[in-house]
Length: 112
Length: 111
Image (cartoon, rainbow over all chains, first blue to last red; front, side):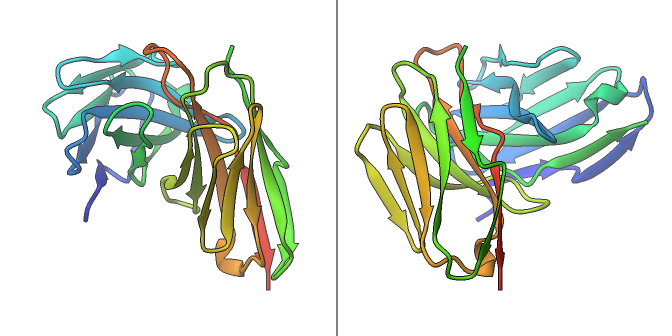
């Protein structure tokens, strides 16, 4: 049972570079989410997709874009990485609200 | 603004020493409260959902309870493998907001 799979697990970027974080879920969930987790800040929602074909901003969307490619896949793109985006990024999925969200193991991103 | 506050920030227990973690919230019209466990280098792992005041859920040494303003995660006779960060999150009403997470309680159980 894979659940939520995130790639890559680790990445180091230079300021100004771009990259896409990938997320796929095999639970047939409608909703998917991207969070960042920083020490002392808790998990903060970046973007979410309530269903295939829709995306909405969360608490901290600036500097990010997302694509809900199909029901299984939800990607997060950093167009021009900044050191402030150094964080651990988690993808999650759920069958809807208020059902629990299920998380992947994260992507650890460092921007120099 | 919805707020979720967890206390204490860190807790060290001896094996077998029972205790409770607290999650207080200021959300009106709560649609659900969730407890997660997070191990280092891993994503949060779902433990419990509580939907209404008075509800209780149990799993092994863990028991979660909910009142109108807070939730408790009771840990009975903990073992070292219970060491982790425990997160709570609330689902406020409306469609514009998703889960709001607390900052977590880091639990260490010493053998």
